[in-house]
Image 1 (spheres, rainbow, N blue to C red):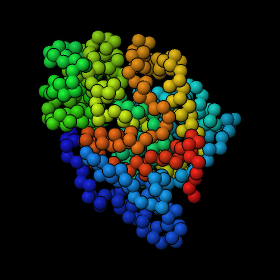
Image 2 (tube, one colour):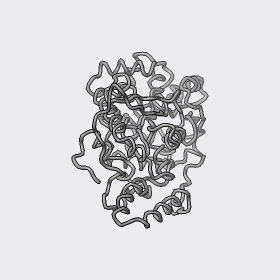
Image 3 (cartoon, rainbow, N blue to C red):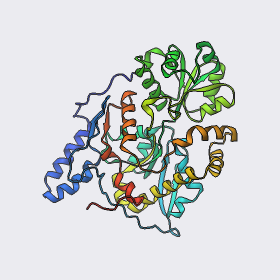
Image 4 (cartoon, rainbow, N blue to C red):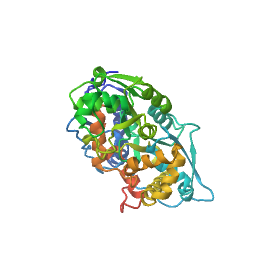
Length: 404
């Protein structure tokens, strides 16, 4: 898979732009007032900024700038005796979505008048989560920001409604044998670590994933090409298989989601070699990664339920930050890897859990820059048009005004 070839930013004939042209033609037939009202909603996700070293994130100048469609959320409480059902699907069972698990265990959804219906199994692939939300099979997707960056290119109604994780939770885990052979360690400089990986076999979950993207990004930053300078071995999302391959020497390192690094260290197989959450990668500090998302039509048709969902996640994130003892117990149950591994994951990752669902411009920009440099996307939607700030702020009581 060649990631160094980016799509042309002038390809205006794709279905995304054809759909936009059709919508604009329809709007032209309306009165001036109708046009501005509809345009504010229709263009909520259409501003696309060209990615690059100086990624621009300026939105089109609309009458209500920075508003993602309908801006005022109805924060009235739902009935706890007759809860509203929300269908939610999720990418996987990783630290990215621990806040959602806490909200379930602490009955925060129930307290907000919601009944959450989850997928029978985790979908494992981001595109499947997007497809499930786009088709209407599910109303909310718990995934990663990569999903919605890609989705927004073909659907202007895509919206981010909250943050789960303010940190990139993929680690490079190196075998003990590799570290001894190359005379490097977790304390070596980033340049020394990446250079040592050149020519080695590195396990990833698969192509077009965050695990491959991190390698692409790291090698590009050092003037190399991960597609040519290393051998990438796709191992799927099976952590046990990945650890066995590392132990047997079939791969020299792994690029995998936490908690595989903590498990490798606990078993004496390897060490967490490069960790973005630990601060090892300057360009990924402050990144927003785990998110929840939906369509603007879902926000419009279910404003109370979406507001309740956001509030429940906020309660969970506040709980995690303020209750370390109980949080560790919940994390241990969630991961099922034993208390020693859980404690290591807690110490390494818990600071990256979002303090609230709000997403800052700076965190969004870090994520956008990374995705462009990692070859995952060539275009990044404008922050003000993809992040449903009004929905989030209104749900949390942070917005004092509503746009009509």
